[in-house]
Length: 230
Figure (cartoon, rainbow, N blue to C red):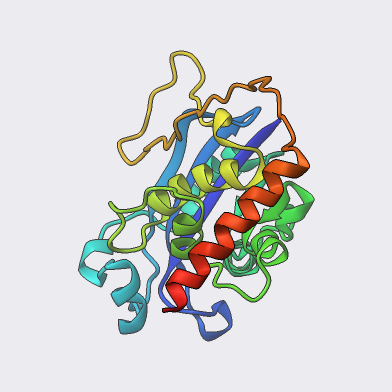
């Protein structure tokens, strides 16, 4: 089973307002194992980044100067995600932006992302498991003891990497957090493996007290309670 954990950063909140993708980060897993393969790119959006969005991810207009446009990386991107299950936190947001980019390119084959990939929304999954609680990435990392201390701002590849570890913990346990043999670990990748606690069952006989022992114990306790009352 091939899965791709995906995240994007954008110039703002909605493609309907003319906002665009400025960063894509993808982390590959095969059979619930991180392979070390990633797809990562920054993009020139041909518009300004909203100040509010810039506070979240820290990506500035000047930084994006000279970066490729989506049309220049789209074929590599499609090859990376083709046929995979996409793991996305708040999937409607990222899927909406990606499909908007395909629409701008008039890409009729990839008009709908889910015709080429399946999508697993970790936010929807978390809301089912933890109704009424905060289920953003930071809150879930704290709840599941996944280290995100190196994350002071959002970043697509960094968040995808954190989400990969979080997804594995949420859906099956820490034993899946193992890289395939000879995999190259990206710099942002941190594997969080909880220590295994081994328990041993002891066959210790339990002897019930006699009636006389119970009566003596009750008398002893009544005597203590009388003393404490004074």
